[in-house]
Amino acid sequence: MKFKVFLIFFLILSFSELSGFVYGSLDKEQSQITCNLSFSSTSVGAPIGIFGYVFPIRLANVTIQISNNNRGIWNTLTVILSDYNGNYSYLWFPTAGEYLVRAFLHEDKDFLNATSSAQIIIVSKTLSKITCELSSSYVMLGENVTIMGVIIPTFSGEQITIFMSNDEIYWETLTIVDTASGGNYLYIWNATKTGNFYFKASWLGNNVFIGAESLKCKIIVEEEQDLTIYFVFALILVTVIAGYFIIKKKKR
Image (cartoon, rainbow, N blue to C red; front, side):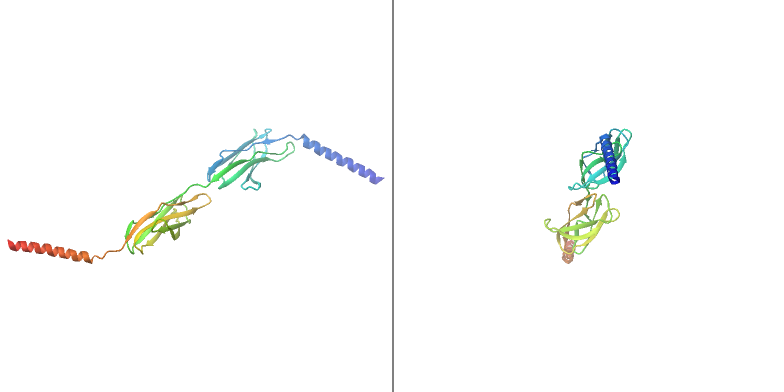
């Protein structure tokens, strides 16, 4: 008998709590939230404005979420508080990639949760530049030539690959050097063969900048000429001229 009374009491209590829960959920007001981006595409380093509003108008914690893959995995970028007019805004500096961005409102005691539509943005790397110059465009066999240049914007410790060719078609890697603090690089090349040679430089870039390749530069390497024949020719010429003047003087 006592067990039956307890069971009835438990069922009544459970039903009352369940009824209260259902009534409380139905009594909550529906929420809405929007999400907008200042740009749909940009480059690394440029800020992106994320903004929107909450309705009904109120102070609310807005969770901004991003996804950068196709698996539907959302990560929290930040949580910010809307103002008294229901507006919110956030400045974001993304890395390179393609992102989906949305805003989310958690359910609270008065309002149900809400999720905005997702916005897409493509963030590209920034262009860079690299130069390649030679200390001379003409040298003799065995002389040294300085190959130098700079990457812009300037970065230190970046690997620069210097290529060399004698036909502008097939390029081989001459060497790899690191940039100094000002983004400058240099390499001393010894001209061990005669002919026309071409050089260019490139770098792979980093997480902000796209890699770049320089214009090519040319150098002519010639074999040092033997000056003996010129000396003999000059001596003969001087002898002939001197003889001419001596003969002319005797005739007088």
